Amino acid sequence: MENLIDLDKMHFIHPTSSIKQQQEEGSKIIFEKGDGIYLTDKNENVYIDAMSSLWNVNIGHGRKKLAEAAAEQMEKLAFSSAFSTFSHEPAIKLAKKIATITPTGLNAVFFTSGGSESNDSAVKLVRHYWKIQGQPNRRKIISLKRGYHGVAAASTSVTGIPEFWGMAGHLMTDFVHADTPYGKGTEKAITSLRHVIEEEGPETIAAFMAEPVQGAGGVLIPPDDYFKEVRELCNEYGILLVADEVITGFGRTGRMFGMENWGVIPDMMTFAKGVTSGYIPLGGVVVSDAIHDVLKEKSEGTLFHGFTYSGHPTAAAVALKNIEIIEQEKLVENSRKMGEQLVKGFQKMKQQLDIVGDVRTIGLLGAVELVQDPKTNKRFSSDMKVAPKVIDALHERGVICRAVTYESTDIICFAPPLIMEQSQIDTLVDKLHDAILFVQKQLGV
Ligand code: PLP
Image (cartoon, rainbow, N blue to C red; front, side, top):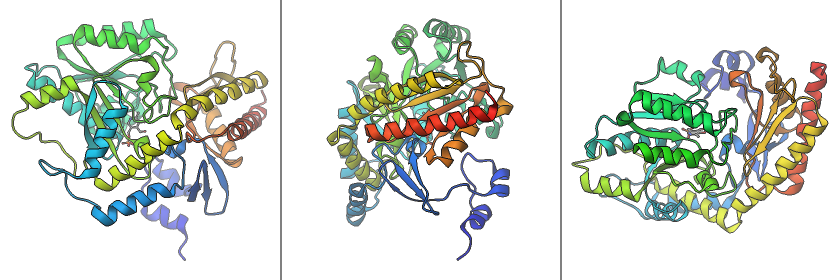
């Protein structure tokens, strides 16, 4: 049999990868199978999947019920179009289910195949909404620095991490970024947002789009009052609030949706990832009744926006089964409970190690920051690659995790499956402790 590593190098352009490094070194790990919170590679090494792969395998790996739901639907009707006046039962039922579990007043769903498509769709929908409302100048989208919203045309520009703009050449026009509350607090972040709105002209702003918790930016949990103030500011200027719940949806933060942590209801919500726990691609945009009413009353002609796979019947059937499992196994509650245990473990570890700065969780979404001096929060210089070293040490100890190093931060992110048990939390924290201690000694701290 031909060597998989060689074939991989020859033929597979990996997403978000250094193509040069991939060519030189090849893939580090080739995964073979998954079961619960564990992944196993081709060499039979077992890892805790502490990131639920890409923040998405919420119910854990190897669930036969999802495979059965897909097989059953594929045998009956694997695919048919939902364009225009065609429809099918799985998508109708899923739309209804999502309307039921999202906060009050969000009751109509447009389906996509992932997060980037959902956010691009949201941008087009808000602009269309303002156009048919007679305010076509409201085109601008404000989002947060360090926010991540995907890599399609508009979602790249909504993203507030400059590293992601490179391949697009430059940002599209009419996308503006305000300060994140991370490290600043609500007052300064709201002042920055108000300033941006005033500078740009409130009558040109279509929407403010943000993740309830900035995931790829480093699990940046906002202060409790931040989104309430954002909601008020949006109301004051008549700006739509779009919540990107791609990571935070479906139980990740200990609530079904992230915004519920602060009792804030957005005008639109985008989702993907956890809706199917990654077993099959699916995403979407949920719109408020007020927006839906305007679309129903004022849209003239065809809405020229739709993907071949909008409302894919097999994906919808898998999503329905996934949501049923989340509800039946009370995984939202478990996420909240286990998140509290995880942060206790982090806090204990912080007392014992010298380079651990801020630690935080909200449900099973968490982060550990590594700093030179926890008292002053002085960061390591980025060429020391402290977080990537900890990630390597974690791999060696059987944990898959992710580092965020934008703006000279060293953040280790955690988003384990929502089925985590106390003993697994303890093992994860022990392995993390061991990995950080190893790197700490290497650094001579
Ligand atoms: N929005 C958020 C908050 C994300 O974290 C991601 C992906 O990580 C996306 C959007 C893009 O989703 P996708 O990769 O499915 O296009």
